[in-house]
Image 1 (cartoon, rainbow, N blue to C red):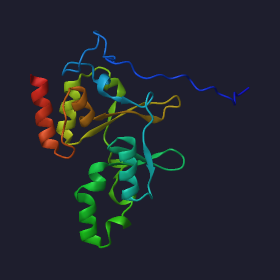
Image 2: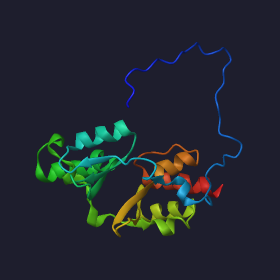
Image 3: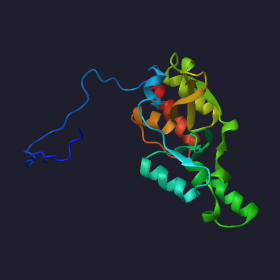
Length: 197
């Protein structure tokens, strides 16, 4: 039976001089040799943000802002991955070039126009990631010139499933750094300097 009547909890003013909890002394900051899995967004623990292929770029940007992410998976009604779109795709040079080439205005562009199609998404194997360290992921992202890496594993029926995402911005946060969103070269230089320290 579902309860329909809930009593509010009692509240009181915060006491003067109150502090806040901090991570326990067993907390270990992320380092270059930390397990890579520690900096992966695991989709078994966190829901991924998705968007339909016919959404506008403005809708995609708004969804990224609302979810606090810079990457959306593009899917169809059956949950199949059609591609991905990043903040760089919606607010970078790609939309401007499309408008210059084809005319129109930014409001006319859809996710389909600027996304990376599934056939062009490069992925990492979860098995390999589980044996890797943070430094390997940074090197992989730098080598590809991308801010994100997609990790896949195999489902119960043998199908490929996206299991996780690495974000250079998230790795930077876990290293205790604030990074520029679109300045990839500067971002990698900052992370390499931190890892070498």
